[in-house]
Length: 136
Image (cartoon, rainbow, N blue to C red; front, top):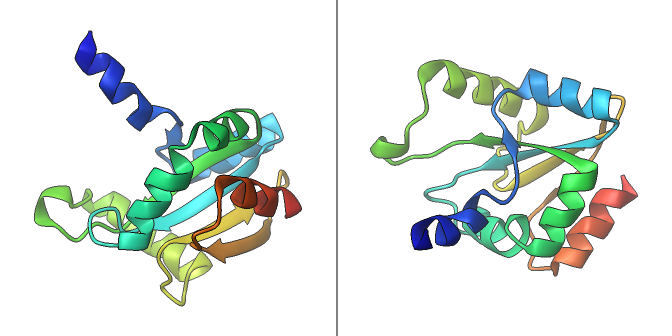
């Protein structure tokens, strides 16, 4: 039981596993879609964003009601490599929505599946991230 309690915060938000399905879910549920480009095992700002924003209880509560989440991860360590098909999908998403190669890079899609805005990590409080997402 103790292990389950400790592991729960790491899985507090639901990250979708397929981008097309995430878009459909956002459209059907009339929620914004957050597409996050991350280097989960090498990008220090990505790791900070995960810990300081995506795992924060205020963000989790907001996301549950208002967002669909999808992470396009680009790990570098051999043990964390993605399946070739998923890696190719993430590279395709990066070519379309992150051609500059910024990490972390957050793209906000509206309820109509169109891009409404994007931003890069800053050390702002969670409330500022939520405000920025709402502004799109």
